[in-house]
Image: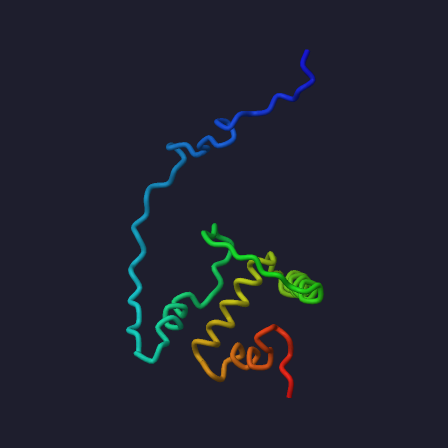
Length: 134
């Protein structure tokens, strides 16, 4: 008798699990959203972002980035996540929290431009990530 464990093969691991009988009928494609015309002042990227004012929520995402944060930043994020759960009955993971924060920051940037929170905070922090002097 072999002492080696019997493991499933690739065909069992990567098989299609949906059944045609359980599949829902195809839905009509969503209505196209009319994109605003670029104003010619270089803000076309900002206008394109304004089409998604909220974070994408808990859906399958096709792009991924890695962001490094300090221990204090991670702790603050976890405390915010737990506060949202305890005081507001909102159960969110860190990814959703970050996507919502990015959406809010970019919406503010689109609306206020030079006076946005993003521009103001980036002016305080130098290009190397450290505080600027004087």
